[in-house]
Image (tube, rainbow, N blue to C red; front, side, top):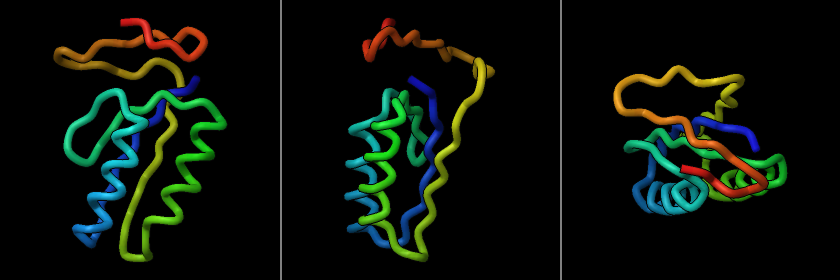
Length: 88
């Protein structure tokens, strides 16, 4: 399981709704258009395929792999993953 940060900017409101609904189904937290997602290689591939079918050329989606431990500020907490289970 690898941690990803996904940020998006979708031009069309109807597509925005569809993309947001898809991304929030994978996310564990986030604000507005930036979401944190723990994904396996298979889940990441699935997400990419689904996004490619939704977005158009004027849209922008950035998927950033977080390597190592992220820097946390404020009330942020690190979540542990164990065989697909999130431990809070």
